[in-house]
Length: 150
Length: 118
Image 1 (cartoon, rainbow over the protein chains, first blue to last red):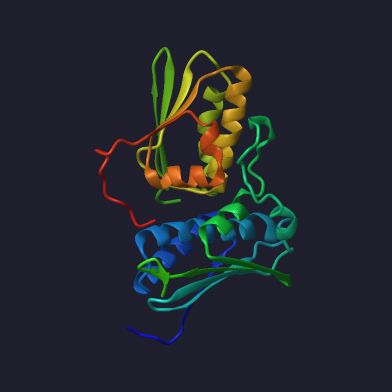
Image 2: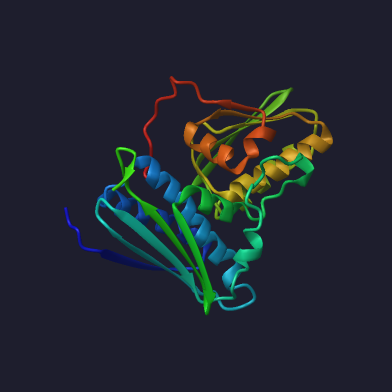
C-alpha cells in the first residue's frame, strides 16, 4: 500500500452534462484508495452537489467557465475533494442556515433550496467552503476500519 | 447527447399513470423529467405512481422535483406514490427528510440486481 499523498486533477466545463464525469472519476479514485461501496455512493452525491452549485451559480450572466476538481488523499486513509470555480461567489453561509433540511416541517413549508449543502454535510466527514476569487468547496472523508478511524 | 442518462417509460390505465425512471436523475436529466411529468401532475383523474426500481442515482435537483410534484398533488388532492424504491435512494430520502411526506414502498428483498458504476 502506498502511504504517500497522491493527487489527481480534473478540469471540466461548468455544464450539467459533465458532472457525471466527475462522479465517474471519483468512483475510480476512491476505489483505488480503498473506500467502500457505501462510502463512495455517499461521496458521489456530495461531490455532485458541489459541482451542481458551480454549474448553477458560478457563471450566471457571464461566459461559461470551468470547474476544477482536485482529488487528494492517501490509500487506506483519507480522501479530500476540492471543487473550485472562478465565478461569482455563492452565498454558502446564508444557504447553509437550514441545518435540519426538511425534518420537522409542514409540507407547505418545505422547498429544495439548501438541500444540496445539507446533503454534503450529512454525507461527508468535513465540509469547508472558501469564497474568495470564486468558490471552493472542500469535502473530506476518512476511511473507517473496524469502526475506528484508520 | 449520445447516451441518455435517464430513460422514462410510461404505463397508463384508467386509474393510474405509472412512470418508471431508469438510470440517473441528476441536474442534466431534470428538465426532461419535469417535461414528462407535467401533463400528469396537473390532473387528478389518475393517480401518479413513480417506479424507482431502476433509478440508480438522485441528487438534490431530483429531490426538488419530487417536492414540487408532492405539493401540486396535495393541492389537487391527486394520488402520488413512489414504488420499488431501492435502499440507496431511500437513504437519501431519509437524510433529507422528504421520506416523511412521501407515500413510499421500498423494493422487496428479492430485488437483487447488479449495480452500475455511476
